[in-house]
Image 1 (spheres, one colour):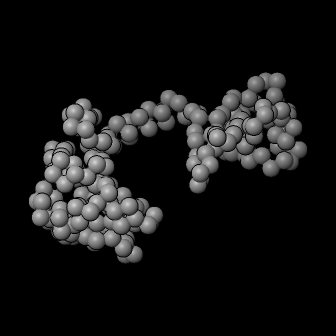
Image 2 (cartoon, rainbow, N blue to C red; image 1 turned 90 degrees about the vertical axis):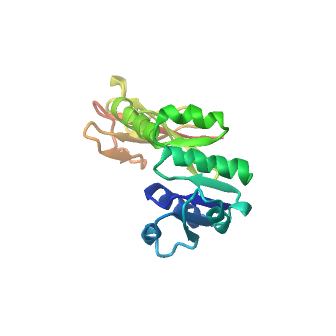
Image 3 (cartoon, helix red, strand yellow; image 1 turned 30 degrees about the vertical axis):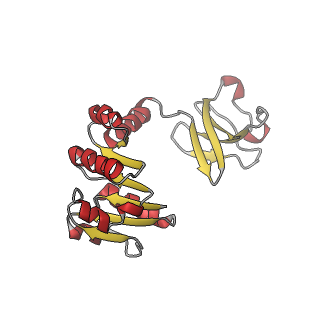
Length: 207
């Protein structure tokens, strides 16, 4: 995929490097040439210095042949303007813009633009960490997705070994977490016993 990243700050730089690592063709635009010095030394993408609202700068960066544009500057107003230029003037269908103010999401959606609000994402993550630390999690490796869920040990389970604990079909007992936060992986040993205040971690593959 041919991707144009607007803005070479922390977010834009991270995104450009990730895309480059995954084999995509990447071009980065920033008005400050010094910003490109922070890119990894083995970055294979193209860098273009210039004001990102300038259509000539965008053309020099290859926007006319882009499959996608990511607008990552710290200025919400600038981001919405550049996103509209990319979508309406250059006809790029896949445009994603960074926004800081969650209230502006409606404005972006009104123009048919996709957004990522880092303020909202960080707030949701902190809320979950504070109030729901044991929520279910999913991990995708290749095309396989594994779901993990946690249950607090029932009194009737105290003294049972992990290797002998009965599980449902398709489910595995991945391990347990002690009250002090340390984790024990289920290696099939008979001396791995469930105790008071332990939490059991179960896993299953999602089709």
